[in-house]
Image (cartoon, rainbow, N blue to C red; front, side, top):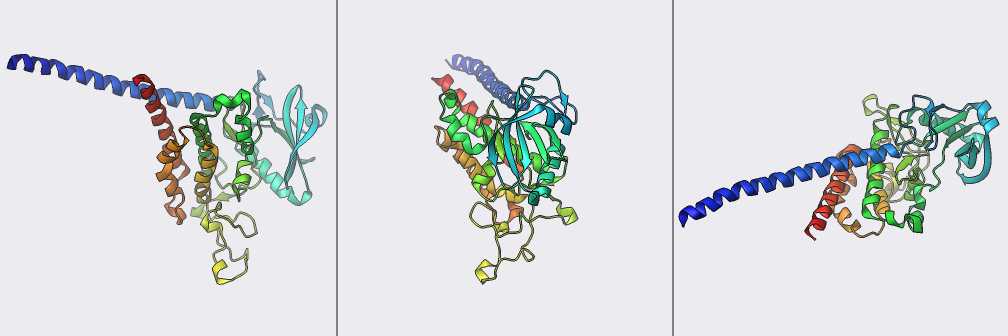
Length: 346
């Protein structure tokens, strides 16, 4: 009897070990698959991958083409209708050789510096995270970029309510958009043009308007007119504008610190700050991106700790965009893995 039990146990241990090994292997393979899937989607979101400097290629084009110059823009880009207007630019739906593009023109010479700064950032930061530059004309204060017909993030809920897009209205896709958003912040904070701060983000609505939704549901940053550089090692810090900022959306260090003392706002006395103002705003943007979908509450639960860190009053205690990005990707992978395991059990 004892020998029989001993024999059963000796055979049982290898079986359990094999099962555990198989489980670990399947988890590892699933993780690698999710990583490759994310990278593939990220590459698909940018049609100009593989083009050399100062070239572009839109989705339906076979070859990369040099950026359009003044003569080509004036002769070949046909303005169709006004689709947007801000303080700095008017944006028109336009057409170039059968391709729909966005033509932006300076609204007022008062904002010429902002326009030129945004154009210089577009040139310097071309890549998967930034809207694709098609061409520009300094003489006419005009720039041409790739058109994303779904519009900016303010339209997200309206887009997902449409019949043809309702299948995308799930926590997986919404969390992927949040991953894109934090990836863009990480890129801007470590860009080829130095550490950049998104200064045009004084409210949730203004921040959402800076990002475009691509046809395959990824994000690219579009408006780079207010993207100053910071470098604490050189004592280079920023102030986002020359007016007093208010509200809970902006970071505490962006608020006038002497308001309780009754001192009127003074741009000269306002302290400067760095890119960690962008980190403070991450939880609010992600809350909007997640919307109200099944599974969204679980996502918020898993992100609670990192979001709490983003909201630290002391900016030095906030995580970097890379730290946040790692948590977001980890939560996405673990939730997909858990969902797959639950389906297997059924």
